[in-house]
Length: 364
Ligand SMILES: [Zn+2]
Image 1 (tube, rainbow, N blue to C red):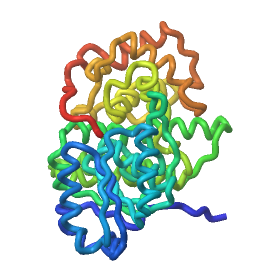
Image 2 (image 1 turned 90 degrees about the horizontal axis):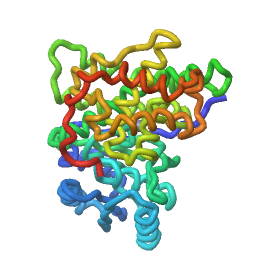
Image 3 (image 1 turned 45 degrees about the vertical axis):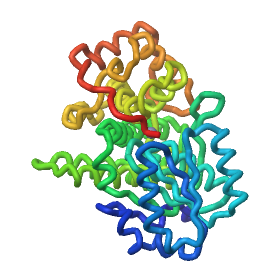
Image 4 (image 1 turned 180 degrees about the horizontal axis):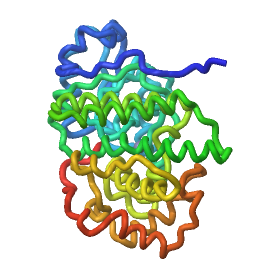
């Protein structure tokens, strides 16, 4: 039986995408319609103003709502405004939190959402999952896919490199996540959706293919990263869960958030988690090693560069298997504190330290 899958109708990834919005279907959608913009703070405000300039002659009304965080209080407040003002469409503008909040508010109020990512720091730019903060802890929840995604490559080009590193970390994690999904399938714990698997794998491979070319055009690499993160989001939509893009490496990142103070960006932590996950997976069978790409992409290779101590990293690995009920490589090992300690030396050697600078803005 065929399955119904939700994917965005419009994907626009180009230079000057916002200035050229009037040439697109997204512009047609808002003709004489009420639009609510949910905007992040900081630099995002300027992008929001650019969008307003372009759509002001087309939409019948434009309402701007600022989103400072992704807490349940903020979401409830914005949902109340949306229910009062009854917009026909929500435009979510921002680096991370504003996109997640827009997806949640759109899902709860049944209003279609178009996302305008101002950074590609994770696969949240086009996924059926949103991270929200409840009782000071981050939780992932299922949401509707956006109806459209508009990415202006000129805006991405001016982002702190740290955000792009985080996005690529989140993308590379598909490899260890798919390894874990295969394990779960073989152990009879989970269904495999081969099409979702193919998409999530190809998302990484198409990015690595561009990276492996002799001359890498940074703009082309950025566009491919954005496309690959979108493909990852669609793979999740096909699978009906985050499974194709989230395995043991994400459990480590979730444990860093939950038990060690969430000191770095999601994708940066996932990049660190991938190294440990692949080390463990390599003990079961041959896995694709991604470390050489870390060098090439200047991704973080040591947890201390993200602000975590040895003790915290040990705790994150120890707690990772309990973060959610998901069969991964962790289920195939009995890890004691001693074995984790030994592995930390192997996965994160001294020379992997002090290679990554925690600079630039957060993904808000
Ligand atoms: Zn992720």
